[in-house]
Image 1 (cartoon, rainbow, N blue to C red):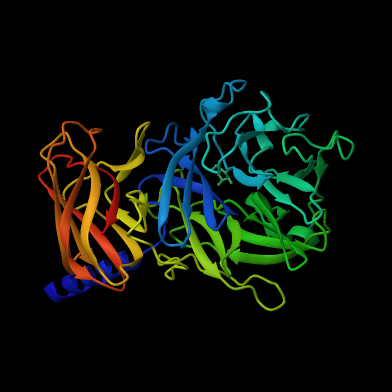
Image 2 (image 1 turned 120 degrees about the vertical axis):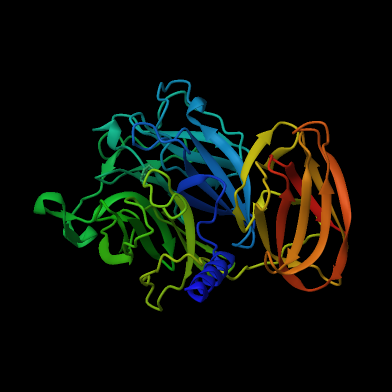
Length: 456
Ligand code: FUB
């Protein structure tokens, strides 16, 4: 019996050390919308609050995470919220957004559940975003409660399209300013996509009705002259399916599921697809982190390969996620502490002086940073920390929480949770590329906050 428990514990340890999904562990995040810009992947997410109200989606703001290696994710915090729309009185309903860059400006299309599709604009992918219109973007809708899940795409000829909708799919042709659209087509600008079985397949819905599979969460893009429409399908519970077309305006042909149900997936799912540094990735969400709560979801990612004919294979929603980094991390440049491949027990917080930092650090919490390139060798470690308690230690291990101890940085009381001090310690000389485990040790209280680190 004892041996079995030890074996299970060892297995769980190995499993956790290899886990990359979900890719954010500090908050509940859903509805991933990846955007590739300037060698970096930015993912805009919704944010399921830790406390769910009225057993429903409880979502007040939108967050952003970025990576240049697909394994370490930097938290940019809340980049937009319902408060950014002065004209809307909604206090809940910050649903699935998508962002895009055009002519040096970043446009974030935000559905406010019950108030339709709105838009924000910024000079930076991580905000601050402002409302350029003072009203919703999509006007004259048949049913504003159905106007959710916008997806945006700019075709090769420069024409931009915004698709959205549950349970039907609509689009508008955006003007070059990206905040208005051509009113001369469709119903005052809104075109309803024909929901037929050739385009979206069929499934048996609740009550035995035969329905098209399209449900919500559309994601449009073009690859090798073929247009793709990926979406949450056959819900609820939702699968992920896709259709393709020779033109962005159709006709669409149903191509089947690309992600089936799995016990750790929530009753909703929501796709985002990109190519980055020669690889293809599908983003989605699960309810693994919350232990199965469908209103507390977490974004995940899997790498996949298109088949030679451009079709997408069935993709397994795994706990391992993306194991291969596409770049190494340079520890000799300042690294934000909120750049994390995996963490246990931590949160992030924000203040004006430091931006985002790692918070709520307790004894035995840890974070992992993957593929750190020590080059010929690091000799010392420096970190910016703040503490109003007795502080604690940061222990640095190679390859695992029980790996080789490289060094220990002790952190004392700095006079406040936002009184930042730079501290350093010696490291065992290390070369090559390694995963580093930052293990936090101390007493029972909260130990310290952690803003950035660097090696020398
Ligand atoms: O996150 C709220 C809603 O749930 C989204 O808008 C849908 O796509 C579904 O994921």
